[in-house]
Image (cartoon, rainbow, N blue to C red; front, side, top):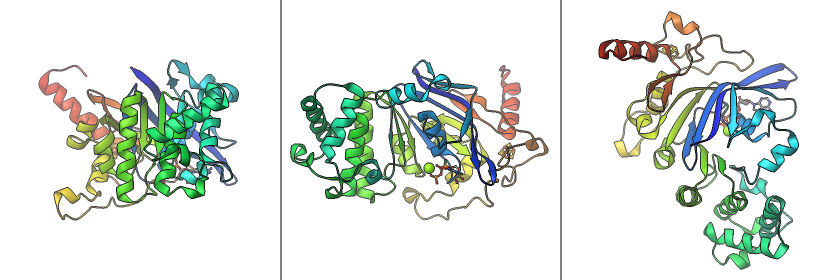
Length: 332
Ligand SMILES: Nc1ncnc2c1ncn2[C@@H]1O[C@H](COP(=O)(O)OP(=O)(O)OP(=O)(O)O)[C@@H](O)[C@H]1O
Ligand code: SF4
Ligand SMILES: [Mg+2]
């Protein structure tokens, strides 16, 4: 069942230089208890799309969307107050900089307990027990002692675990993890990802995982969405994503990712740069970098289904699909 369903999300930011349009058609669907990975190059609007979902955009930002549903609620109708109540038990955010998530002068256990009491109520004693329980769940050894530590007494990996505990202690139905392991070394990164996956499965939460690392996608994803210049251009189940990528940008993303399993092979960077953000897309935003661009690519392609849970926004894919349908006699 769908937990989060976002269609054609657009975010406009006001800057002294005029409006910018960093998100111009993001589609994001997360099923209950499943993981969707968001990939795309730096600056393509992954974080801002998620901040829009969480109701945490910077002041002056505005959003439009065809659909913005979370657990049966229309997020577009929420006030700041109802959004505050939804965060915590509804949706939680784990981000890259764990240190920034904690107040440096308060003990870790007190901060976890406070997060619990804010959203779930109960006595200080019960909230403290919950804090210790969750530090234990995320693999912090001697959790009763460690709950009395201050953030600077934790290592980077321990802090990341504590931030996961602080997010999960309120038992959210959706967790958004924005590059949660980028700042950690590879062995700690693997531990944190394994922990997130285990907790996500045991707690049955929906997870959106933003990552640059296709190895992480292979480990974690049920479904994958590719964003380019603020627009979702392909979404697919993870297996299809790796076997039958369709959009030329998704193919380029894969080709420029080093793969140590495949042995030494040259990576192929995608030539050119994404378009500036101060204009709305008129045609396909990838057309200046796409070796397969055609005249029709001056018009904006919409996301079209090409298989089960697989949709692509590309004129070439659409044309190939029409040819296949004509050959097999299938209706589009
Ligand atoms: N407050 C802001 N004012 C102006 N531009 C902004 C602001 N926040 C983000 N942007 C711009 O919006 C674009 C999208 O930003 P976003 O942080 O969503 O990218 P991202 O896909 O998360 O990138 P990364 O992979 O580097 O984290 C970027 O070009 C960024 O510079
Ligand atoms: S729509 Fe055209 S320019 Fe865009 S990715 Fe497809 S073929 Fe390339
Ligand atoms: Mg980001």
